[in-house]
Every structure is written in structure tokens, then in C-alpha cells.
Image (tube, rainbow, N blue to C red; front, top):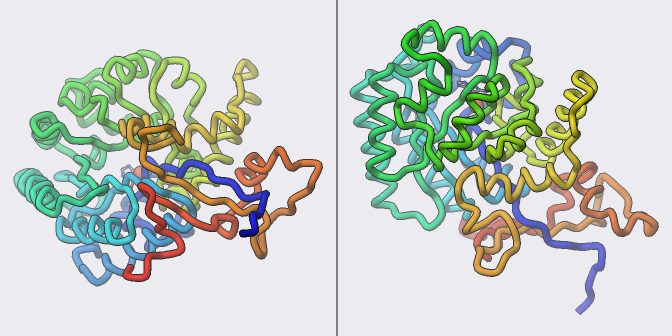
Length: 384
Ligand code: GUN
Ligand code: FE
């Protein structure tokens, strides 16, 4: 047998925050800031997922695209539609991707009134969704409780979702402190709470199975609460820049010993690839260095860790995946730096830098095979 000596294995990458339905408009619409973008582009598109044919098309496209780009685990938001969310769970399972999938909950939406549930609907549909996934008993696809963000949820809904997650010991995901306008609106809607973090924490939504996207404006005090609760942050640098939301100071979060993973936040972010998230995490860190001067920039090794082991810690699955350790499942990418049409050359004097050069220069053409729990899922399974 002939070996190609530039090939290597690396742990599969983990996308801790991605909106599957928003793949329908990826690469468009990012001129508006967050709240306007939601009202103008996002909600009208997500509303169309009551149509299961649309769900099947977009969801098989995103699962295939993420897998091909080396995302072995994805933590997805679906839409408010239970049946379409089940389509996403079926699709991820069929293609062999490890995934958390959330039926989105929202009982308040002034900006696009059509795309909204009643409080009772949101709670009962979440319970139905959970029951169906329990019955399906997928190997590696799990439900995750998903209040969209505080602006789109009543206090009662947040309370009931926190209670349900607590009773059933479920994972939880949402958004927090993404943009200044969002935070202002949250504090207006929840006058009884002192901080955005308190809104979630006082409703049992901050646990060691919680991942909150963004957190750009969390104060040190709020980071301390995250640390106490064991809750994590999904850092989504592409989205933060694309929607002009802000920057997360990852170094500060890590100094507070808060768990951090990376997210693409499709389609607030325009790239499906965690390689892009790695690069933008490093660039964001360098921008903060240039602004603050006292910033200790993220190395490529640290950013690589965020995309792999950090992601598994953020999702509390680091006992299962995230690194090559005896006892964990084999979630891996086979990288070929010399693939046909590779976007970079292999120079012998840089032969020890292949991982770094793949992270900065590579793309899916270099990902020769993808394994989840030891099973080869790319090239795609013949029955998928
Ligand atoms: N906050 C509430 N919903 C969303 C969403 O779909 N994307 C992003 N980036 N932020 C949100
Ligand atoms: Fe998001």
C-alpha cells in the first residue's frame, strides 16, 4: 500500500451555533444591523419552513455542506415549526452528523407578527418535539431547548422552558448580549431584571448544559455568573462583524474560566466553514489588540482548540468527542494538503507547518474523508 505522507488526521470540528433554515439566504442581506436584519430578512424566510418540502431541501443541503466542510458536530437552531425541526433531526441522523437540534421558541414578535407562537403553543410543541425525538432515539442527534432570545420570549415562556429543561436534564441554547440595541430592548422588556444574564439565570436557563451565542457585551460580573453556572459562550466572529454587532473578547472570557466554542451563526455569518471561524476568531483578537494594546492575542493553536475541544466543552460532550483520546468516539477529518486543486502548495521547508497552513489556507478540497463515531460519513454514505 502506498502512503501519502503529507496526509494527517485531525479531530472533527464543532459548530456550536448555526441556524439551519437561514442557509436559504446565506451570503445575502447583511447590510442591516441585527434587529432590522431579523425583521426584514430572517423572520420572513424562517416563516416559510411550515412547508416541509422547503425544509427537506434546505436541510439536506446544509447538513451535506457542513459535513463536507468538516463539521462533525453541529448545534442547530431550526424554526418554530415542530415537524420541520423533526425533518432536520432526521436529516442529520441520516447523514451521520452528531447534532443538537432546537425547535425555536418565540411567543413575542412585534417586528414580524406572523412568525410567532402563543405561549401555550410554544410550550406544548416543545414537549411534543422532545417526545418525538425521545421515541426516535437517534444515536447522535439530541433535542436542545431553544428560546430564541429574551426579546422574542415572555417571562412565562422563559420560566416554563427553564423548568422543563431542568426536569428533563436537557441542553439549552439561546442568544445573549449580541448588539447594543438588543440589550437595550431586553432591559426595556424586562424591567425587573438588572442584567441580560439575570433574565436567563433567574429562569433556570443558565446551566452547565447551556450554550449562549455571542456575549460580546457581557460584563465581568456576568461572566462570573456564567462561570458559576458552568454555562458557555459560542463565539461567532463572522456574524459579529457581518452584522456590525461587536466583538467578543475571548481572552477575557477564558480568563474568567468560561467555556468557549466557535460558531458560524449562519446566516448572520456568511461562511459555513469552521476554518473561517478559526481565522476570524484570530483576526477579531488582533483587532482587539490593536484597539486595547493590552490584549494577549489568540494563537492559531488556541483557535484550533476552540473549534474542536473547546466546542465539545461548550456543549458538555467533551467526554465523548473533541479530541483524540482513548475512550472518546472517533470524530475525525482526514486532511490531504496535496489534494487535486488544493488552494495551497506543500513546500518541503514548511513540512512541519501543515496543520497551521491548512487552518489558514485550506478548504473542503483538502478534506478527503470525515468520520463521526468511527463511521465514514464523507464521501457521503451510499444510502444517504
Ligand atoms: N438573535 C435572535 N435571533 C437571532 C438570529 O437568528 N441570528 C442572530 N445572529 N442573532 C439572533
Ligand atoms: Fe444566531
